[in-house]
Length: 219
Image 1 (cartoon, rainbow, N blue to C red):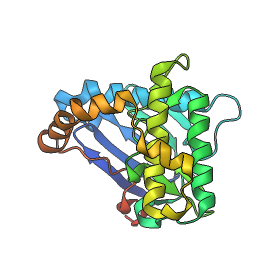
Image 2 (tube, one colour):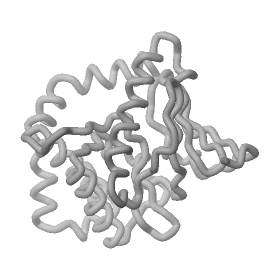
Image 3 (spheres, rainbow, N blue to C red):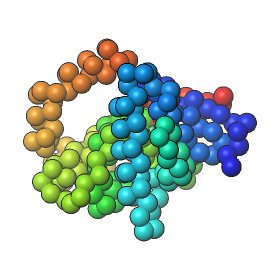
């Protein structure tokens, strides 16, 4: 059982709240605004599907483990670590391991879809990468053209972080990936992104803060 004396709010928005309770993390869709509860439950199930797929076999280090799912709550394991924007990783080994982690997700036909968000990247006490918040993840049946395009964008977003913290270590191939957006990304940037940002930021006041700096503050 988790240590109920230690409770920490990681995120609270229109889609509910995410809390650390002892050594687990609980996503609570029942705390969403009434008009957003159906979507909150949908996002919770997306996260469950992705994490369950990644847990098949031996699982993947640096990914939370699903512990329980009911109609309103998803419980998963806590990963100790500092968010990327706090830890500011500058070790080439971190980014090599992060690239392997992303490729293991893709090998399981899981696309994270939100790797551009620094708060979703953690640096563990051992200096290893970890990922949180799979609400927007896609769990695909096979690796087709869409999976390849979205997988390219996943990797490109990781390399943008590498360009921020360790630009001198970028290889020629990595620079080429950074220079080329997928067709899906180009269409999204030209059409849907501005609307998405207006709705989520201005109307819903929704920002992803699960891995933000307050993750390291004691309650």
